[in-house]
Image (tube, rainbow, N blue to C red; front, side, top):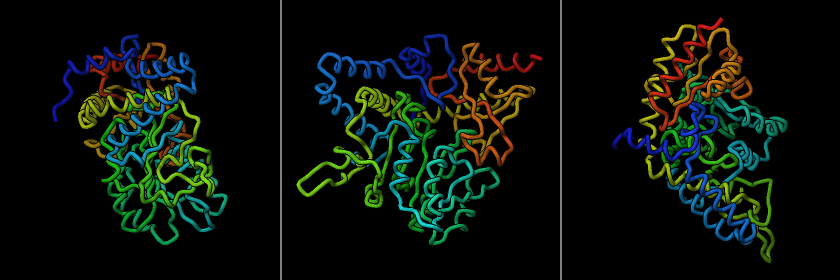
Length: 400
């Protein structure tokens, strides 16, 4: 595997309108910058609909959607039939979770301390039915403890859910090892891969998960309003979606039967334009090679972390093993609220993220954090952009 060259990075930047606008973007974990060809794919489909009629252009739109499905399957090492599309990662996860019901009093749901707030909100229907959401202990690095998880397992456990790359630290949880444990005990296993897709290799066969979801707008560089849902083919029979229409449960003389693939989670009304853009973004990262992407993100994020350590007043909120962290860097600047810091950097045309307690409530409360600022790098960021970010943070740190 060869590393991304500077010439390749520059070409990627030349093909990305956001890189040509003067903005320095370090908020890829919130939403990354799409390429011009991704924008073109969206616009082409919209123009086709305007020219030929929205319904009449649907035939070509359906072809583009299936191209996106094939590209997603390639990225995940999954059968094409196991891929569904949704409007957001939270929607995808919630649909799969609700389809697991009905829940019974005493059912147990085991989650990592880093669980996404949206997933916890979806679990409240199960809690109202009498199920319990229980937090798996962390190990000494802050990751989900395999030994702690094993000690919690009994016949009442209905689900193990993992947030693979939490939104508020550089942690990469041991997703594959947890999958092996879940399989050994025959417990359904969901993975929230919202920050993983497009940042590191995701092989659902190796992970051993039953369900995995991820957003299109983050590291995949797809459009907002798109997400992927993977459902293991053998697990599909256990999922009974609450929402159905003539697409997910087509009519036959014998009645309305659910599809026998992951498209039982889709509906007849969909934005083919957005899926055309998502398909292009997926094809781009497949061509580029996600291993090469991961290598460059590791390099750049290591530089950012080293530089932040040198700035007086900055505290990093890192979890996990230093040599095995994601491109998400959580920190605070003394005396400056995280959202205010985001605003000040934005005025200088530098984009970062900021998260409050609702994003990862269990972990934020456990660590006594009210908010964190977040730098998230992508493979087409540059050393020069990092230097400018660091210089700006140094100046802000000296302000009264």
